Every structure is written in C-alpha cells, then in structure tokens.
Image 1: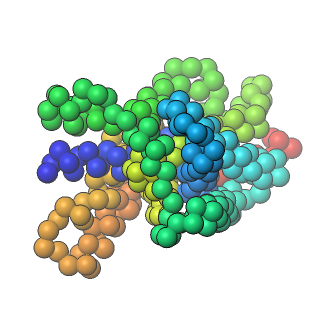
Image 2: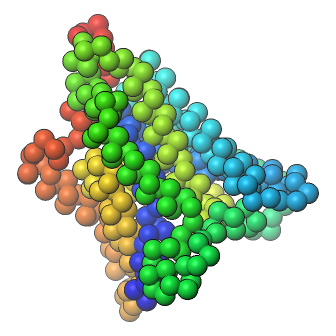
Image 3: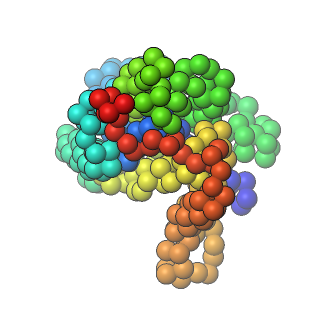
Length: 325
C-alpha cells in the first residue's frame, strides 16, 4: 500500500512540479503570473488537439510523431499564453494580479471550448475524449522496472515526462545559482532599476523568463492528460492543480530543487484522503485542505523568520517604469 501511495504521490506531484518550476522562473524576473492554472489548462488541451488530429489522419500511428506532435502543440499554446501575459504586463504595464486572473479564466474557457468541440467531432457518448494510443506512448516506462522489485516500482516506473520534470528543476536551480544569465535574471526581480542601470535589458529578461516559464508550466497540463489521466480529457477535469503549483512556489521558497520534494509532499497530501479509511465526507474535505494549510503554515514561518534567502524577489508583482528610475 505504501509503495502504491508513494507512486501516486509522485505522479500527482509531477504537474505541480512543472507548474511551480515555470512559475519560479517567471517570479524571479519580478512577474507574478497568477495565470499558471490557465496556462497549464491550455498546455493540456493543445496537446490533446495535436494528438486527436494525428490519430484521426494517420493510417499508421508511429511513436515519435505521436509524442512530438502533442508535445510541440502544448509548447506553442503555452508560449502564446506567456506572450499575452508579457505583452499586457511588461509592454502595456497592466496590473499583474488582474492580468494573471484574467489569463486563468481565459485559458480555462479556451480549454473547455476546444475540449467540448473535440467531444462533438468524435461523437463521444461520454462528456470526455480519450487519446488511448498516444497516451500509451507517453506512459511507457523503463522495460526493466518491474524486475527490480520495490526499487523499480518506486523510482523507475514513470514516463519520460516525469523524469524530465525533475531534470528541468535541477537545471533551473543550477542556472539561478551558477550562471551569469541566472544572476542577471535574479537581479531584475530584486531591483529592476539597478539592473537597468547596470546595462541589463529588463524587458527582454521579463519576456524570456515569462515565456519559458509558461512553456514549462504547460507541460504540466500535458503530463496530467497524457499520463496521469491515461489520455482522457474532460472539461474542468484538471481541478485546482494550477493553484497548488503556485502555492508550491511559496512552499519551496522560490527554489526549484526544493520543489522536487515539495511536489511529492503536495501530491501525497492531495490524495491522502483516498487512503484513510472509515472517515466521513466532511472529514475527507478537511484532508483535501491539507496542501493549502501547509502552505499557509510555511508562509507564516517564512514571515516570522524574515530572512532574505527565504523571501521572494523584492520587486515581485511590480511593473517597471524606466522613466521613474
């Protein structure tokens, strides 16, 4: 039971890891993107659209196109969402909180519209659509995982997107700490006026960080649909995982390597109510609150501790006006 629980916790946490890693990159540039839930939703539906039309048109479905087409569609859709946010907040200097919330509503609407359209095109009897063949390629695990007992089940039984999430988080963590570009990005998030005076192009860094972060977050939506949900898309089926990804940023103290362990913890807390027997419905709802309660406790601890390395970027959520430098 514990092995099964930990496996499900990891799989549940991978979308959160993608979302939090993307949001950490964005927030390190000073942009507070509350549109991550909508971006993850768009990343998922764009992958489904690519898979649907490939499966419908191809006489023989081959593994490489079956993976690359949804993957590229997801990245392009997420990139467009990141560009919209960047244009509104960086170029037009719109309020970041309002823009992010609008982007979440917009992304959810886009996902539900195209999801409903695909369901009608496929003439499905259920309010969902299933990309079984494509999902099987995404869910392929290492062939020798089953021969290594509990170790193989716990560490080697996941798809390539799960391992990619961990690798990306490690690379991003190294990027922030050990590269000049990463240090410049952090400087933009801390004090854009000083960074600008030092010759750093603030707007360019904000655009790039937001767009790259959005593309990474979008992969969380693709993973959820193609791997965790076995290729099944249903409108509003993504739940509040996007908001949990934003909460995980605070829990991980804006450090991608901490997000790896935080995502597993959040994934476990998210499904814990399924593994507690003999509890009523009201108690189950209390268990579902656990990730948010933990986030609030961490936020209180960080605020009381009040150390610079535990706080977010100083200019987070603030638009930069070069004329006021």
